[in-house]
Image (cartoon, rainbow, N blue to C red; front, side, top):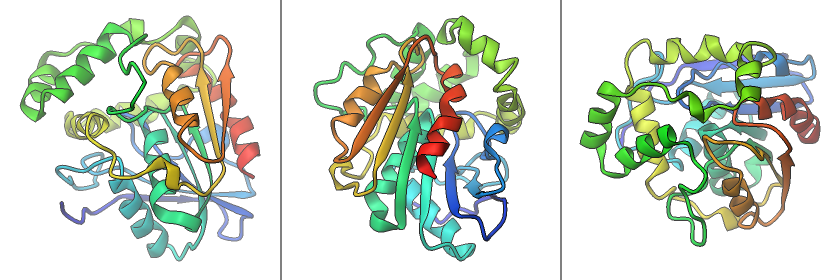
Amino acid sequence: MTDPDLHIYDIGPKSARLTVLWHHGTPNLGTPPAPLLRPDVRWVSYDRPAYGTSTPDPGRTIGSAAAYAVAVADALGIDRFAVMGHSGGASHALACAALLGDRVVAVAALAAVAPFDAVGLDWFAGMASGTTASLRAAAEGRAAKEKYEASAEFDPDVFTTADFAALSGSQDWLNAVVTPALAAGPGGLIDDDLAYVRPWGCDLAEITAPVLLVHGDEDRMIPAAHSAWLAGQCPDAELWLSPGDGHISVLDRAGEALDWLT
């Protein structure tokens, strides 16, 4: 493992009542979600290694996010903060809470991915074929994953009608973080997917902060069973299943999740 250089985002007043450290999904840059910007919240985030101008950190795990979060927070003089993330970023947020103790005051995790070794969870059940093929390739190792990505095509079945509507409407900000995330190639995406099928390097039972898990009950990219399993592992967790929502449209609940954090 190395100490990567991370591109940092810092948006909002330093005097804000709450600082939220945002963890982006796959493949995204770390720009905080435009619909959630508020004058009473300071948003801090970073591009994970191998995305944008952040340098790679080969072999990183989900738990590596804790070291990155500390480096970012310390560089900005921030002591305690909430964490929030979407999709794979939600998993990174949970790992931060598990490893950073009382530096993390609360967690909001939307459409989170459960650990690959989650006992009692049929990890691939309910996933669209595109997601399943991508993550099964990752489970075979870097060479298989790189080979898969060299010819992979987008599987529209990973998204619901509600997801596509959100992408062209309420959550169109995502288009501005996905395209540049892939501009330099699939390196960040590959490292992310490899991390999802490795042990996280943390124990969710050690989370002391309150946790909110939000998941669309029609999510075909990461089924809602993942968040249900996670809710059972975190000592102080609340689960919101969002009727009719998929993987992207669940972000329409992010404002409520931010209210919960504040």
